[in-house]
Image (cartoon, rainbow, N blue to C red; front, side, top):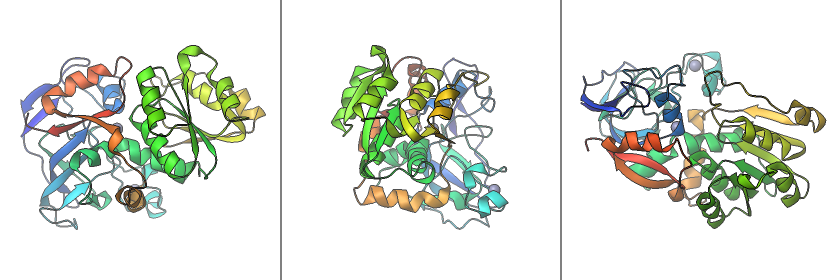
Length: 345
Ligand SMILES: [Zn+2]
Ligand SMILES: [Zn+2]
């Protein structure tokens, strides 16, 4: 099959013919219909992710059609499915208690095993897959990727965002846009922060009540003013110290910070204003992905039109354009994400 292989950090992915994937007993092999391109892939492409090394095939945001099913998998050839990026084992205490995102035996295609920048992908633990709704195109389904699922779980499964609360979103990339759209659907008032004017106006057009340009400085103070005392929930969606601190500092007393951005840098350490956490008695949540059992709740919101995910996907590209898309993450980006929909092109 054809695949895009990382041979050298920060160099173009190599388009190669590689062996077809092998189906596992509890898994399926999918013909990839679409695969999202994500800032997490960029982390790997620049060499910051320990599980993305030369020889790897990236791609963790995919949907596809079953072309082979293992004897223990409950899918049929021809089924169209969508995958969470975390494929939990299903058998350990974490999984059994519904917390699949902390499964210690989890597998993540694209990080440590072949991903979906390819014609086909082997997906183990196929019980994590969800049926692709008829009304959702493969491009949009892949665009849900890790971002809409992560945003859904961050707001509803972690921070318990309530209608009428103020939600601050720091960074309006793919996950930031998802947080805005879901926050609005849940009845929250949303203020967004970014450094790209085009992304701020895009967010305003999608229902953000206020947009703060971080280049003007003093982000936290301005959000405290806009929200009349601080946001109730604030989500960091970039992974750098400046936005993490702005997120903590823009909260009102007893506010909830959610760390969604994958911390950048080789050590992923950063200096945090712990005094804000202490003085305002804040809650700090980390979150990563969404347990697969929560797909029905999210897909219902999308299928019934309560959340319109169409603004998230900005462009559909061929596999050969993936390198240029990864390179583009080096600089501030226009709104929306790219999805690979032609895996042979
Ligand atoms: Zn498990
Ligand atoms: Zn992703």
